Each structure stands twice: as structure tokens, then as C-alpha cells.
Amino acid sequence: MPKRTTILYTSSDGIKGAGDNELIPYYCKFSGRHAFTSDVDIDTLPRRRADNSRILDQSKHTVRLYTSDGGVKLLRRKDGAVERQHRLNVGRLPVAYTAEAEGQLLYVMDGAVTAFTKDPSASDRIPVPPCIRKGESGSTEVVLELEDRQQHTAVAKITGC
Image 1 (tube, one colour):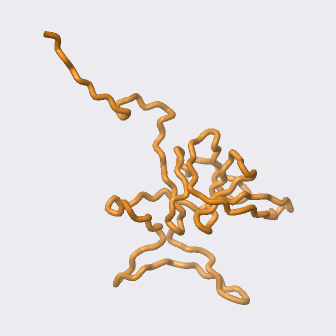
Image 2: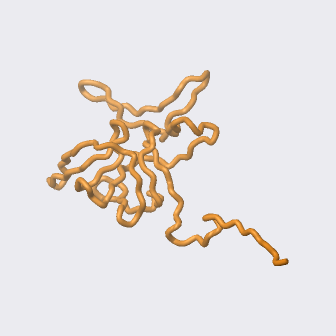
């Protein structure tokens, strides 16, 4: 009688190639909502000199956006040039933009997203940004940097993120 063997083969048993990158979810640093998922660590991407944003080429990397249209923003740069940005928002907060409506280059705004991981015990909840923490006696703490202006005081920066 011939011998019989059962072999179980899964995708994790295959040879890992250069294209088998791990997908990294990125979240809005301020709201904690899912912004996009990509196969590249954005900290390794080149920066744009004009505003220090990261340049992600969508023709070279896999990107799945979970953003909404933030409209077009016109900016005047120091050299006098006018720049048109097609903003991508998470809720009402801009996290990225493109130079053209369907542009291949995605500019991820400096400090707008984070790749912090979810707490495994909180699998059904939205992750809390690292700049928001639980304080003593159960209170919630957010450290704000305020800027004193002539007419009013404005929030300049949320620190600790």
C-alpha cells in the first residue's frame, strides 16, 4: 500500500520577496482616526523643502486612503510663487495633499500622522493619540502650547505627540 502524506502550505510558508512588505496603518495624530495604510515607513521617505512634508510616490508604493476631500488651498510661498494644494482630510483636519487633483505624489504633512499601534485589549475602539493621556484621579490630560496674540489667545501646538 502506498504511503500518503498531507502537506499544509500557507502564504506564510512562501519565500519572502522584496515586494512582500508589511502594511503599516497610519492614524491622524490629533483625532486618532485611521488616515491611510501603506507598504512603506513614511519616516524613510524624502522630505519636501518648502514645508517639510514627506513625499510618497503612489506609483511606487501601495497606499489606501481613508480621507475625504478637503478642497483646494492656495498658498503664497516666501519666493512669491502661488501653490495649489488639493487637501486630504481626516474629519476636518488636513493630513496630506497632492499638487494635482489625481496626482501620483502624495505629500504627508509634517507631524500630521502617527503609526502607533492599537492596544490589543481595545480591538473595537478607536486608538487614542499618544498626546492624550489619562491623568491622576481619572482626568484626561492634553498639553497645549498657547500663543498670546493681540486680540485673543490661540492654541499654537499640542505638545507631547
